[in-house]
Length: 109
View 1 (cartoon, rainbow, N blue to C red):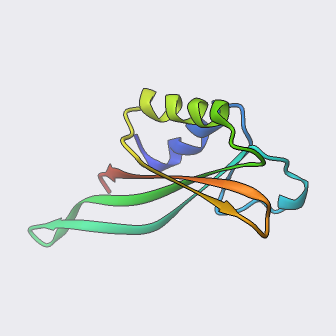
View 2: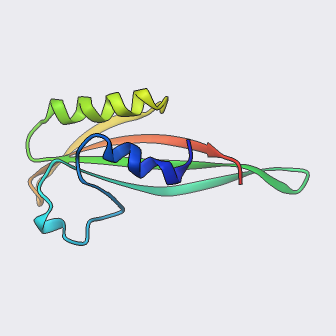
């Protein structure tokens, strides 16, 4: 899978999806998904980039502990063969649960 395919894969959950943030976050009701790429590492051979490893953070925001939304996203990630690490936090100022799925994509340039 390539990064450009990720948004449509995440949208298949039926939840709103945005890269980095929603322009109208105040009017986007949870649950929703935000994803971004905090890091990309190039792997070189013979002085050229042979592939890139991109770290992807997928954040699921919910107003309650929403097991159905989590399971929907996890089924989608599993179906695409994306291994992930999962963690969760309560964002008090926003009054939202944030579930983080961290994964990596390897792509040829």
